[in-house]
Image (cartoon, rainbow, N blue to C red):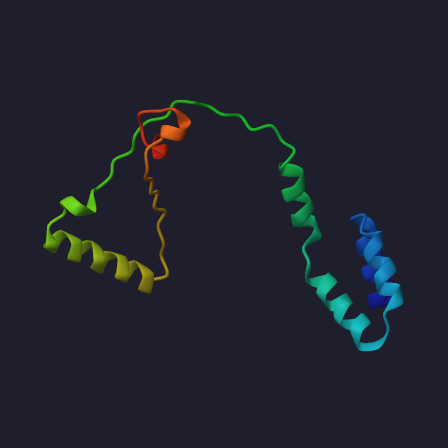
Length: 118
């Protein structure tokens, strides 16, 4: 089989016939470029991800608890500098972290707590 036919079979396998119609209208370099782009797509992974969106999630706990945190305003100048240095070193190593920030009162939610508590 040639590259065009292989690409058409791939598209059929993943129900992408509308792209086949477009492919058949193209010629020359445009057709080659589209075929190249199509063959770079991991259709199997896309379908797995899509299928996962349909799965029921099992939530083991629905208990919300506060997590430990540091209030930057309460840190000493030396402590702030230490954390800045640690952060810069992590960035240089290509590491990252997740930071959760919450602010504002939850008055629109009719709560006495901050929105972050939700």
